[in-house]
Image 1 (cartoon, rainbow, N blue to C red):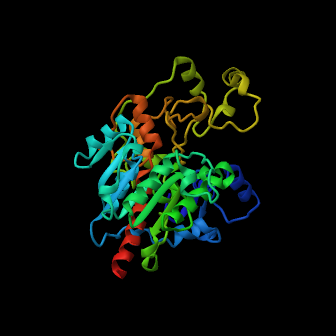
Image 2 (cartoon, rainbow, N blue to C red):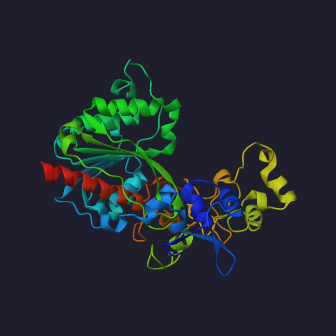
Image 3 (spheres, rainbow, N blue to C red):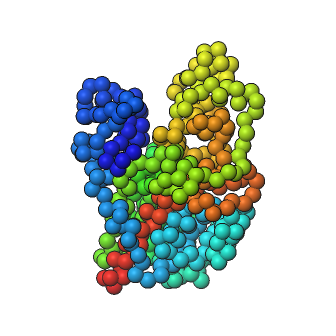
Length: 411
C-alpha cells in the first residue's frame, strides 16, 4: 500500500488488536474509512493521527536516522550469537565485532561461513574469561535465555542471578566494562515470575555500575520487518559516561511490510524469493491444509474435518488460531518459531499448500539472500526462527551508534 494509507489487517497488526476489532470500529464509524476498487477497506494515515503508533509513522525521522554513521569504528562483543541476525544488523549499523560467542556448533559454522574474518568462539560461555577485553569494547550485546532466579540474597542483585546465563552476561559486563550494554529478550520477560526476574536484572545492571534506560518492547513490524514479532530491549550506559549520554529509541518506518514484500521483488528485496529446501507435509495433513483459505486456520475447515484433525483439543478453551494456520500475503507473518510445521504453531505458505521454505523463513527475518545457514534442515530452521530480525537489529544498532557518538562528542 501507499505510505499514506493502511489496510485493516495492517492497522490491526500495528495496534496489537484483532481484525474483528478494527472491523467493528469501521462499522461504528470510529475513524473515517475508505474502500478501494475491489471493496477492500483502508484508512488514510492522516485520519488516524490521534493513535500514537500512526503519529510516529507519519512524522518519523527514519530516513534521517538512516544517515547515522559512527564517529569512529566502534567495537562490539556479542554473547549467545545464534545464526547471526543481531550481529549482522549491528555490523550494518557500523559496529566492528571483535568476538562472538555461541555454544551451538551449526550456528558457529553459519557465522564462520558468512563472515570468515569474525572471531567466532564456540563453546560454553561459562568457561570464557573476558579479562583480555577489559577497556577495549564499546558495546556488549546478548540475547540471554529467560530463566528464573534463586532470590538467595536480600537485595535481588548480581548474587541472585548465579547459575543462570544472565549471570554470565553480567559477569562479562563486570570483566569487560563496556561503555554500553544491550540485551534483548522475549516480551514475556516483563511478566516472568510475576515481574521479579526483570526487577533482579535491573538491580544487577545498577549494581554493576550502569544506568538502564527504561526498557522498551519493540514491535518488529515497525522497523521494516514483515513479521509480528516483539522483543524486549534493554540498553544501559556506564555510570561514568551518563552525564554526556544522549539516547532515543529508533524511529519507525513509514509503513508496514507484509509477506508480499518478503516473497516478491519490491521495496524490501530486489528479486523474488529464491528456491530452497523446505519441510513437506505428510499426505494426510496435505489434504487437510489444502482446505484452509489464505489467512485462515482450523476454524475454516469443514466440521467433520475439524473434529478429526483437532481430536481431543477441539473443545479445549482458547482460540487455538495457530493450528492449521495458513499465512496471508497481505499481512506480516506470525512470529516465526523453530519449525514451520508444528501443529500448534503452523506456518503454511499463503498460496501453496506446504510449510515455508528456509529462504522464505530467512526473508521474513530480513536476512539477505546471500546469508547461508549450516547444519540439518531442522537446525537451519531453528537458527532462523530464533534470530533477531536483521532490520530490527539494524535500527537498534543505529540508535546505539547515535548514543556512542554523543559520548564521543562530549568527551
